[in-house]
Amino acid sequence: MSEELGKAIGVVRAEIDAIDDQLLHLLNERARCAQRVGEIKAQHGEAGFVYRPEREAQILRRLQEANPGPLANDNVTWLFRQVMSICLSLEQPLSVAFLGPLGTFSESAAVRHFGHAARLLPQISIDDVFREVEANHADFAVVPIENSTEGAIGRTLDLLLTTPLKVCGEVVLRIHQHLLTKATSLGEIKRVYSHAQSLAQCHEWLNRTLPGAQRVPVGSNAQAAQLAASEPDAAAIAGDAAGERYDLPKLAASIEDEPNNTTRFVVLGRHDAGRSGRDKTSLVMSAPNRTGSLSYLLAPFSEHGVSMTRLESRPSRHTLWEYVFFVDLEGHHDDANVRAALEELSRRAAYLKTLGSYPVAVF
Image (tube, rainbow, N blue to C red; front, side, top):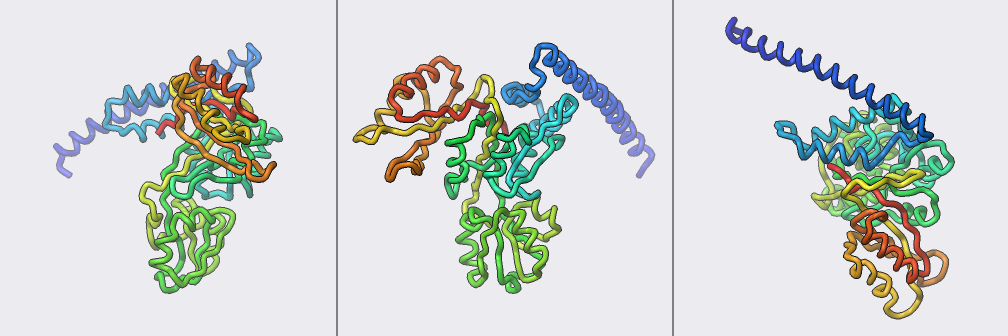
């Protein structure tokens, strides 16, 4: 390196050092402000309300709108989620239950939403994820609710019918499925482990590439990676996190049949969220068993100018051939038009349960 080049780089590095010092000072100032917020909440009897989903969503949206670059918005969002996660942990570390073991897409969704400072609690089933929060062993739960390729996650919908928990957030995660194995060629693979949903998402790729391999569904993709790590002639279909955690090389990348394969997760807590300015409301309802009952139920939404973003039917499990309908609406249940539509719906529906209002996912 020439002396002139060294001096020029040295000047820029000195600027970076000065900026790092400023960042360190400002981050600690932000942390002290977060601590003061906690103290004020405690003085007013709201010490338990540490995490406010609507406030976090408002911060992230404001920062994205103000971002001048060159950092991309998704990088800014990731960075400030970590900052907020660490600041929240100074007040009270959040505990988050999710479908484990470590290395699942559910873990990735939990980290994406709550940051790395949250205390993660992997569970062996979706039922256990719900139970951890219902029993006050965890503050929040993160569970998958629908996939763009395979549709709704039935067990999550069934449990939402009866749980006292509220939906207070959502996470939308782009799903890249990889073939992870210690085998060095496709010809060595005799078994492929994965969650049933992931096997279905890669069905055509498996038909073309590994038609003779046994497909073995297991409880999670991370469990599949654990099994494949101990069997030289086996592979797992899983994500990057599982491959890194269980030291499994990637023999084939992004093998999902649908290139835009995406899973939506919901965040569950003991309270839903306040208004953030861009919200959703989720509910479940049943129609009286007569002709035209569904259109009768949906009419209040159009009458009050409320847009539906999702309508999913599910057997009621109480009466043969009767169904419940899961609905997502644009808006918060405290918005005047949504509130009016729900009031009218409550008079028409045989059964109605508002699952919660929450901010639309911030990417």
